[in-house]
Amino acid sequence: MSARETLPAQGRPRAAAGVVSRLGAGRTTAGGPGSPGGSGGSGAPSGYGAPGGPAGSAAAILRAVLDHGPVARTAIGRATGLSPAAVSRQTAGLISLGLLRELPASSLAPRAGRPHVPLDVDTDLHLACGVHIAVPFVTFSLVDLRGQVVTREQLPREGGPADVLRMIARHLPDFLARRAQGNRVLGLGVVTGGRVDPDLGVVIEHEPLDWHDVPVREVLAAAMGMPVHVDGHARALAQAEILFGDPRARRSLLQLFVGNVVDAAFATDGSVHIGPHSAAGGIAHLRLADSDVPCRCGRSGCAQAALSERTMLLRATQDGIISRPDLQVLLHAGLAGDPRALSLLRARLRLVGRMISLLVDMMDPEIVVLTEAAALCLPDLLVDLHEEIAAHSRVCTDPERMVLPSSFGMNVLAVAAGATVLDAVHRRPHSLPVPLPAPMPSRTPSPTPSRTPTVAAAARRRY
Image (tube, rainbow, N blue to C red; front, side, top):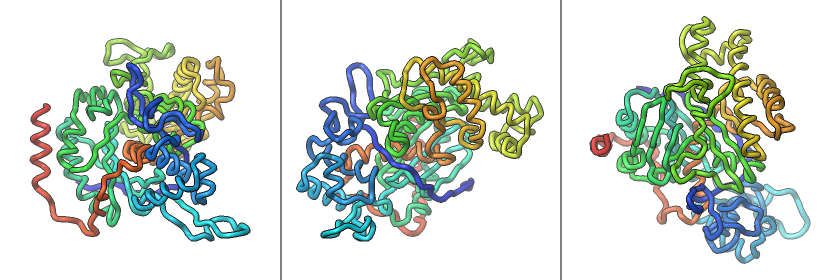
């Protein structure tokens, strides 16, 4: 089975985000009061190192450089409220960890007096490895500390959960040997749709895949020997938007994912809510008044049944718009101007717009980020989405400004997977292992047969 594609990195805008903690009965991915990055004086979202102890100071500095780099140490002090001595001490530590690097003084605008040595995030050393498990395929990616995708590959998803996890464990060593040469891999992030418990690393339920209580972390940690972070893709994308997207996402964000799975995540003050049952953002069975599509739950009009790619592609093949149920074929038809394809894509966006109106009126977020195929590939169709929101929402008065497509374009699945690792690094930079992981070898190693039995054994214990 060969990899289908590898893409170069794309530049990204920059921003910040959160830490796993428990707040009362619920859970969020950002520190609340009393956590290492709780409320502080830097204007940061809680959990991302508002100064208050070495851990918070280091995270605040890393975040300031992520936002403004290349930047001088004096500017970092102004942005974080830290003393020159604290900035000097913490930046030295971050440089030693390979998270920051010094650049030539010429990198900053000319100024009178002694030249400043600018700092920037070091994107040459560390990488996060990501795996996104979708219905048709599995995406493998490497992402740098700024959320830029260095490379990605896709393989078909075949078989049940044990088969998929074995395939991932077999492919990852070769993928890293080929694509991460000379880099240190900080960890593995695995994301998918449905209901996922990030603390346990378990996919509790993924309806389209028919997965239940799948121990993803247990299986892949045993196979790979590196930290494994597991989460739902909507929450992972929310973390990525807070880190690298529109700065408004730090204050309050609704992240909506519409694909074969329909789910959401919401965040306030940089904290992505999980919920005591890992069910926050579960909108798959939210009833849409304008739909009568039957759902596997026995009702009709559920959001996932009405909006899923499966439903849209079935309609497209039945109507003769495309010859086989393939999303890329439908999108290419839309890009070519096929009026029937465009009409079908617009119809889904209008239905998505009505659902967004309901969620916006209930939650009143500052920004809504939509991950949906037509919104990413055919931005001219967003006018239909925005018109529908304007017509139905009592709260949203400027849909064009409030509701945006994902910041990550067609790299969205690759970034989502890596974001779970990057979130942990940016909120607690001193949690990096010492000594640091060794760089990946510069040549493909010989196969290691011992890994496959380990995966199979773990899978047998749980299935």
